[in-house]
Length: 66
Image (cartoon, rainbow, N blue to C red):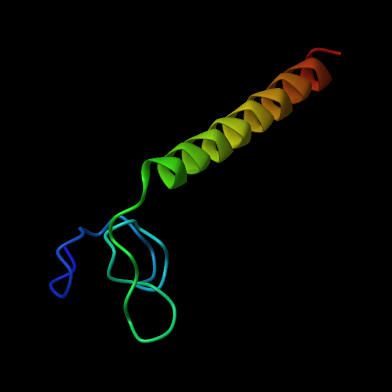
């Protein structure tokens, strides 16, 4: 666990965006609360990333099978 922020040891380097709100760029401040619209946009972006990952996995499976 990171003793400064209490976010746990789940990120490799302290400057990575782990979501705890303490590791932002600039003066060490990052917004901790998002609007519903911001949350929705992040979720949509994450869903798109997952869809692209699945597509890549399916393509790799086809390559291996052929």
